[in-house]
Amino acid sequence: MKVLFVLALLLGMGAFASDLEVDECVGCHTARRDEPKSRFATGLGHWTDSQCYGCHAELNEVAVQSQKGLKDRRYFSVPVREEKLASMVTSPLAYMNAPERVEPAQGAVPRVSFERLAAFLKRPSHLSAQDGSRAPRMMAYPSLQPKALKAVAHLLGVRQPARESAPAKLTVAERRQADTLWTTRCFSCHGGPRPVAGRSGVALGLYTAEWLRDYAGGKVLSPRQARTMPVVPLSTEEARLLYRLFGEMRAEAERELDARVSRLKLEEAAVPRALPPALLGYLWGPFFRDATCVHCHATSPRAASAFTADAEGLKAYLRRKSGEEFWLRLETRALESEHGLVAARPGMPMAGVELPSELRRIIARWVLEGCKDPEGQSWCRH
View 1: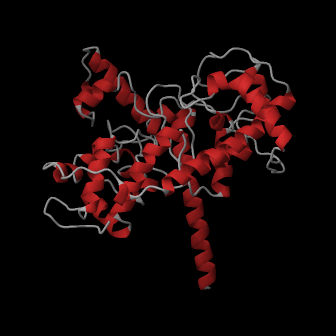
View 2 (view 1 turned 60 degrees about the vertical axis):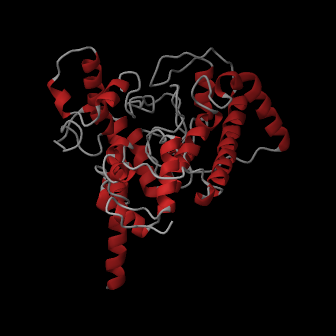
View 3 (view 1 turned 60 degrees about the horizontal axis):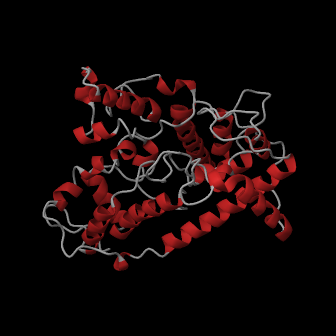
């Protein structure tokens, strides 16, 4: 009887997890993303915790109105500082580039590869052509389970093959041919540390070979923006080679990033000689909003289960994890920005830009000194 109860509980928890992931996708990638379902205490009070796009869209709208000098009653409810509001005019909050639909209508060539979708959702890659940080601006789902993956794919309209089979590893000759295609047809726009087109080879691996062929040939359009790239003819065989190459590029990029993360050592961090006098009061208070912790950890059930964005939540996290883990997640985000890829253990703030290096160094010093609160009590031993 106990076994049946535990099994039912586990199955129920799995369904709950799937619901959370699907609900978060609804808030960005469906026609319902800008329809307030109920009032919520975050932001302007119109949105639920999973409606990231709608909430951010309204906040960005208020920022533009304010910059134009137009009166807007919503201004007094905006939960950001004046300087942040001004910066949002040119650097809008996250999720604004999220396409409402990721797949074309039925009958068209499939765009997103189901075989690659799990890797992308677990470890998103940079998809934005905007200047600045290359840190992927979307939520990551490192613990994504097959059931949740299928539910998300169904919601997004991603076609699931009758039989799943990963493509074979490129032979030496095939890799040479694929590298030549990449260099001559793709690299000028999609290569280098900051690709002109925004999407690197790692990001392009999300799309099916057929979509790569037709998009390069000018036969289909992206759901998010007008076409800007020139026509680049690709045969089906060439597109399939590139598809396999992009998959191998992702695997190589993941290994490189994770190796750098594994080499992060708190004791080797360049830290200031002393903590600024106002640091403790800031870190246990305004930091949670300035670092955008509250955007997820005070609203999303999934994020709040790991860490609540307030002083008590920080104490609990430091007791359960460590100060070094707190610092490590912040440093990991900086590396993710360099690579345009999320690490196996995602950095923070997820879906946001990395914190300034000076602040991260100060936090490293704070951790080395025992994670003290404003009353002088220590909450960690590194």
